[in-house]
Length: 77
Image (cartoon, rainbow, N blue to C red; front, side):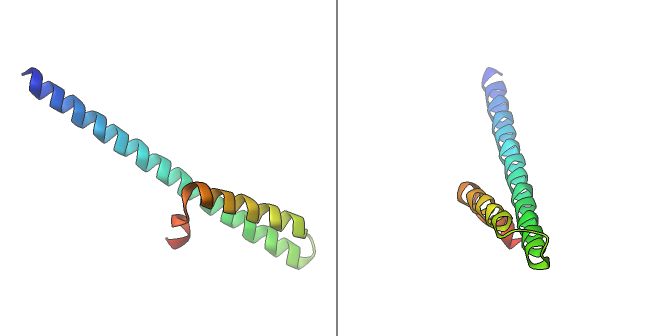
């Protein structure tokens, strides 16, 4: 009986870790999408004359940092 409970506990912990990993993946995906949106908005504002090249560069830098940390999977969905 103890072996069964140990296995069940181990499986539950594995499922919990997988769930946490998926949540982190979704959060990184959303953050990447938001950074991409901000880059687009900064670029649009710059081209319309109401934004600056520096704001566009800052948005690009933030997006590149996110891609370095989390990959570019959000760009492919």
